[in-house]
Length: 266
Image 1: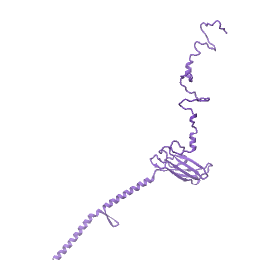
Image 2: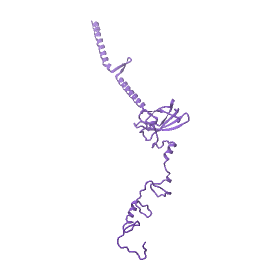
Image 3: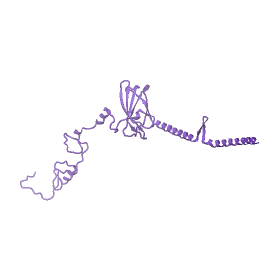
Image 4: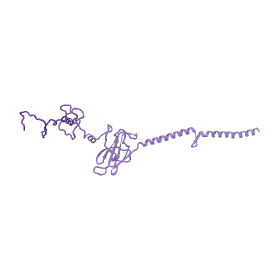
């Protein structure tokens, strides 16, 4: 009887033990997850999720940085002086600058081949409104017939645009900005030499006859050799030739006239 009782007790114990083990495993299941039939703690799942989020953020940020500033398409047809379409190379260079939108652009250069029938296309960062002021693209056309031409471009943000629209003449800009001989000669063509010009201040001697298209304005004379203006002369001669004088052109006298005895009458 004892053996049978023990067998019954054992039979009743193992199902209870299995039930306890099953309940305990069910309680532990939310703390783990399965990947490829392998069980991992829930903490590892949180860490992996965070790593994935960071990687996605870095990828998105890299894509944004790779986009860079907006570009303007400059296109047109390049011609020779005889009107035929040209072929050759266009060399474009620029200094470092900051766009009007705040994007920093490093100094660099670009070489573009002129396509058949003189077709030209290039994409450039807009430099209109850039800092420092007066930032230009220096564009050198090197044609296959030996012709070399230099232009200066101011590229707007509006895209697309044409070569004629971006062509400009350099004004004030970078202190170390290169200028062509043609630009310098044109800038000083109408400038007088300091030694041969009349200055606004200082004592100077003018030689030769000078003719004024408009009467010069003069102050009231102060010295004996000062030039007199019209107002001063009019005031000085206001009473000359009037009053007690007899006009040579004819006049009427009243009252007695006493003449010296030796004065002849004509």
